Amino acid sequence: MSLYKGHLAGGSFAFVIYLVVLIVFFAYKPSFEVLTWFGLCILGSIWPDVDTNSMGQKLFYGFFIVLDSVFLLTGRYKEAAVLGFFALLPVVAKHRGWTHSLSAAFLVPSPLLVLPLIKPGIHLGGLEYYIPVVVGYLSHLILDRQFKLY
Ligand SMILES: [Zn+2]
Image (cartoon, rainbow, N blue to C red; front, side, top):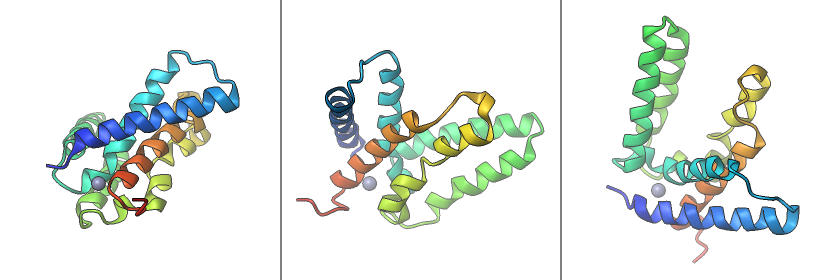
């Protein structure tokens, strides 16, 4: 079991820094949407450990099973197959493999950028959701010393 509590704390700290930057440099006035951003940042901070037995793996794969079941029960087999394929990718890799790379920090949350473009009616995703996930993801990589900052 990985040290997910450390990543939760690191993700929380990174989010506070992100929020301070928004307030100080971009004159952002916090509202309730900050709670959604915080949740996304926390999810980003535990995602990289889906490649090993971890709290993140249990959380995300629990969600994948529920979502895949919904796809199968509603006859959306193409979506179920795509989800199943992408859900397999982390578990066939070694721990601290591609999920702990800088490129993954920007690519894994990219559906949040693409989804509003291909399904504009959904009103889900966009840069405001993408950045908090990347912030959380990067906090994980820093804490795992992938960047060798300390
Ligand atoms: Zn990790």
